[in-house]
Length: 486
Image 1 (tube, rainbow, N blue to C red):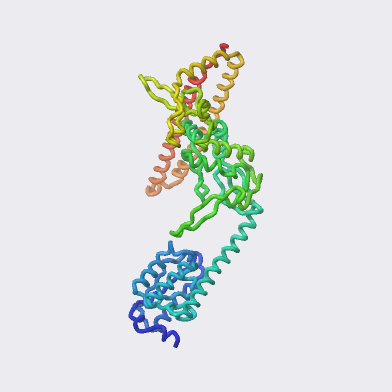
Image 2 (cartoon, rainbow, N blue to C red):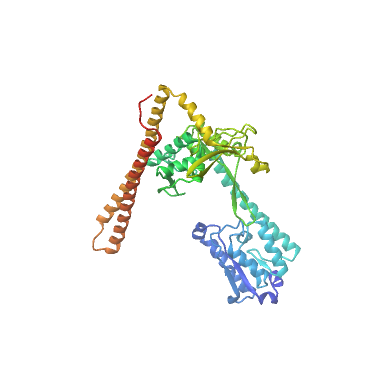
């Protein structure tokens, strides 16, 4: 009788909207009884007077969470049709099917009240324009949101408890894997381990992430990368973002960390990650597993990155850069105390270096302190170095040559690993092609094409290694010629 009083003839002239939703695809597959109960609400609409062709079922949000309406197209369509006056009643098994967010739920109630659209659930029919019904629907919405919060809190509490013990299995960065017992170990792939170790060694030598990227590019090396939730390793050109992400990841120092970021929901419903300060991390356990560098080296790398990022600090130290000037990153302005910038200009067919102090001009619009031609300074510095040359200095130059040779040999060994990997892939493609029935051309043609692709990759890797070897020899002879004269 109560339902008959709230459903009026003007409501029966419009459509009856049935909203069906389950929070995940697993629930859709396994919780079939809940789905049947939701579709069974069509009988309630028929009993109230709607024809079968007037009942509109919206089930496009199956497998979507009700925490927000921003990604639920079905719910957005429901709200739109209610606001346009097309809905005579809105049906849902319970409030949690429609929304688990008070903002979305009360917005729907407001629109239903203005459009004179009743709401039906398993317990009865409600008129959102009535205070008592609106109060009851509001309490149901609050309980639905609180229920979602309690569920999340329980799951979150279990995860945090395991994370504080270092037992929660987080996605590992490239270079680490879980063994059969669940322990974190170094990647068994030798090429991956050697490449990552060479990356940290290169950064310690050049003192800059961008310079490390340039070294990898000049030496023809690629950096390993593993897609999330995939075991396949791919080698791609090293980028500055990858280098910075690797240098800032504590896992490479053997430290277990959890909760370095938190997420904030924006107005469009997206979760935006934000970084936490180190003291606010939820879990940080040093020496939890093997690493590629020590914790002391990790902290030193962070300090270097911090210093490199202080672009406007007075007398900021700078690692050596490319260029012919001898005092790059070292010369200090005598007027303001800042480091000189270097600019190169080609004049009369020859490249000239200039030491310029223009930081004040860029930041405060003040005139440049001074600019000095680099040739006289470099000549004076060169003469001073030549005057100080001794047999010990010559021995030092030879030692530098040997160190460069070691670096070139290490880079060549990494290129050899790439050739070996390409050779293995080509041999595997060959074996797969040989095992197929020659008469089955549909499969044989595809495998033959894959084999040819692997052979081309192998040839490119060998050519790249030979070209890099020649460049290393030329660069070594040009940089420090072999000599034994004092």
